[in-house]
Length: 222
Ligand SMILES: Cc1cc2nc3c(=O)[nH]c(=O)nc-3n(C[C@H](O)[C@H](O)[C@H](O)COP(=O)(O)O)c2cc1C
Image (cartoon, rainbow, N blue to C red; front, side, top):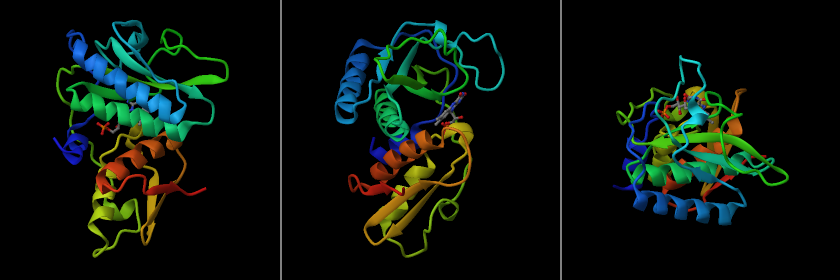
């Protein structure tokens, strides 16, 4: 599966089966986490066979059922962008390994969730992982011109980067980001008010880079 197919196949999954994560998949996921932590300075941790974090006792939207595995996205403060960027890198590795996921900022137990925090670190959020009852469904969302300055005739790499960004998960599917291009240089920024928008931005930047296929071509506007 190429990167675009991988991003198209990823959807949030909130109901999981009992099947434990395969050993080989855990090893591959851990290697991706180690590499991401090394590059970024984050402290992302894989927690397995731990059913408490999603036992919130609050049924309703966003309830995560049957989940016993998750990523604790932990790291130094003010690293929201990296938390999103590297978290999504691990999420797409999971997808490649046949493991479904859902980013979860609100609908989990902050008290029960595990994941060590070293001095100066915090837990940004978690990502539920496991084998889903289904593979999820595609979200409805914005179009190219809603999230960018795209015009017909723009380079193909820009268009495919933007299409990849539109496939990215964002909190409550808010898609509050905007891309602009000046020649080869692309900037991405948060557009509008929302919550977890900086983490979202990191996630969509990772998608853009994969879709555009040109390495680290995106710079965030300050
Ligand atoms: C930063 C962030 C926080 C999220 N928090 C939650 C959450 O607390 N509960 C939940 O059920 N889904 C949560 N989601 C999942 C989004 O609702 C989901 O990604 C979005 O609706 C788009 O759907 P998709 O992931 O299937 O493409 C979160 C997603 C992101 C990126």
